[in-house]
Image (cartoon, rainbow, N blue to C red; front, side, top):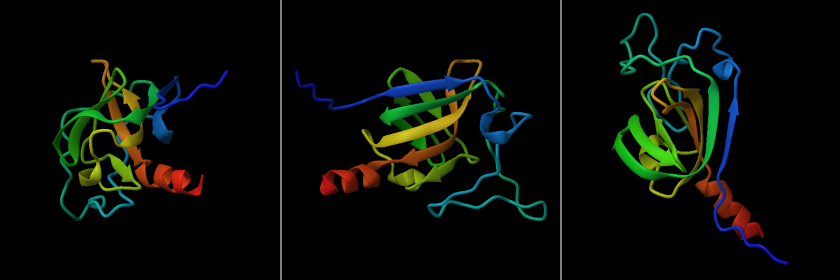
Length: 136
């Protein structure tokens, strides 16, 4: 019997400190796709928005739905998980402004008391999946 998988969603929850931040504080803003680098003590401060809870680490993989907001403060849904970002979020493999509805992403961060996931990192897998499909 053959099965064909069109879309996959995998969510993994681990009860460990998020990304090596034992105190749960957000990591410094940084980017591999040209976003603003972290402010230093002698430079301007980065407004990261509302306080971030230091809940359990969580990871969500899948296609973006209900994308809203303005970079770097965006929100979206993967499956039933509501995810938000701020100025401290690291966007990998694509700039925040390149994300679209349906973009396959890997979002990881901390689960907040309101049930949303604060994404400390968001990696876009669009180019990698296109390359894999071309090589198949």
